[in-house]
Length: 311
Image 1 (cartoon, rainbow, N blue to C red):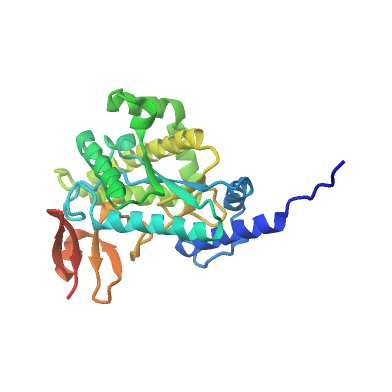
Image 2 (image 1 turned 120 degrees about the horizontal axis):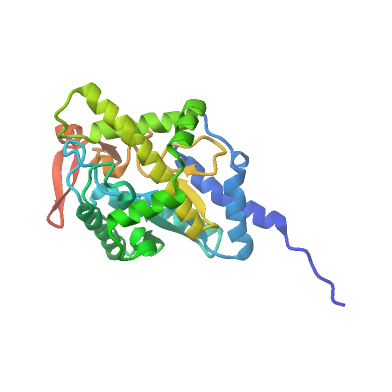
């Protein structure tokens, strides 16, 4: 009987840790201090699975839903330089992983605009236009390590309302369970408050009082979290082995790894809630359009507003 040699688990473990080390500088969190790789056992196990199988590391990222409906925050309803830079960053990150782990990595952008478009007051045709333009951007820039996954891939030609209803009924937590969690868990409370603030800021045409707007947005925030949880469960069902990324800040050790796509002063800022500004030193940051246009001049690309430049 021939002798067999046990696999070198140390080498695979070191590769997995090195892959995670590439993610750590971009960790989006509200925790005050950076944490070492061993503080992320869930992500290490997921990465190690792909490394041992000699397969590309698959990462899923819910996000890139649509542009904010508030024109004071964004340049329009289609992807612009903020999305272009963010997608390029994700593609480059996959390339860096490939230098450590030969099969490389790929990111599945789980575009979630249709999941809660009715709650954030963005029409479905605008969500479609954004998602289609996102796919075209990835194709035209040859960002081949990225793909887009949305409700059309899951539920085909059903109406948008029917798709939302199906996802909500099958996967969403009950309002009672979510309210209890907001009361008992600081992280969920912070998420609820952050989404409420976004909904207030994104509302440009409310005719009632400020307090009435805040009450409505608090109500809608619970719905957004329910749908977001439902979308996450559906993603996990379709991509059960993937490393789960998040555009929201996440605490150290959480199964979801918050990732910062671009520099911004606020840990909650995303490219679809802001405009990109190129500073005089060549670096980029995100901020509301109204502020960016006071600091720089508007630049067009392919016939559309793209970003602002200082100097």
